[in-house]
Image (cartoon, rainbow, N blue to C red):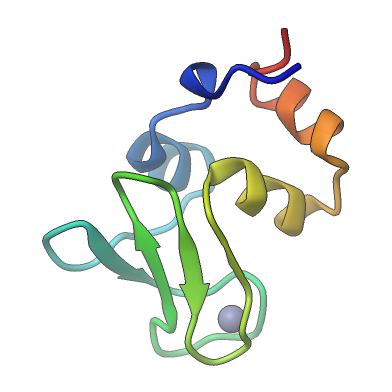
Length: 87
Ligand SMILES: [Zn+2]
């Protein structure tokens, strides 16, 4: 089982844990995409939901769990455990 309320706050996760520099204001911010060799911030992340979408390589997902899975090639359960959301 996964407890979504225990997933990390998207801003803290993306900035502190993943080291992304979030640019802009409002719910959707831009960042350099870690899923491809990015030189212009192509990744859009939603700091309220954790959703992400890269305009260049097509990486996308709906929350920080999906991001964590994609970034590190983890299963749903592995990613949830890693993020402290497995109960
Ligand atoms: Zn990308």
